[in-house]
Length: 114
Image (cartoon, rainbow, N blue to C red; front, side):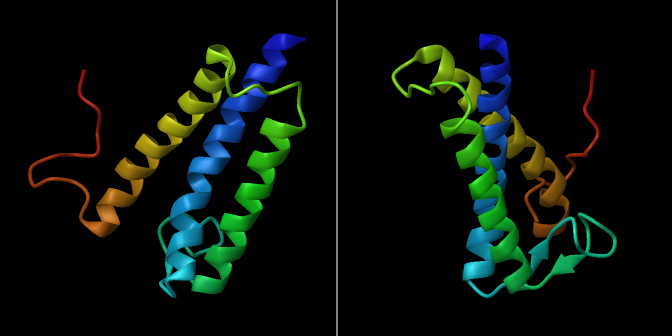
C-alpha cells in the first residue's frame, strides 16, 4: 500500500527534524527539554540524555525512510512527504521551545489566531 509508505516518510521526516536540536544541544554539552524531563517537554534533560534521544530519533527516521517501501529522493512525492513531516515538526518545535529560549517575538503569543 503506497499511502502507508508516504505516512512512514512523513513520520521519518518528523523524527529526523526532531533529532537535530536534541543531538546538537547535547553534543554542545547543553541541557535541553526532552520527554524525559520533569515536567515532560518543559524541564531540562542532561546533555547525555539529549544526545541519546537525538540518536534514537535518527535511527527511527532511518528505519521509517529507508526500510519502508522503496524511498526515492528523486521522487517529488516521496521527498515532499518526508519534507512536510520535517517542516511541520520543525515549526511545532519552534513554537513550543521558543517560549523557553527567546524564539517568540515580543507581543507574539503561543496561541494561533483565526
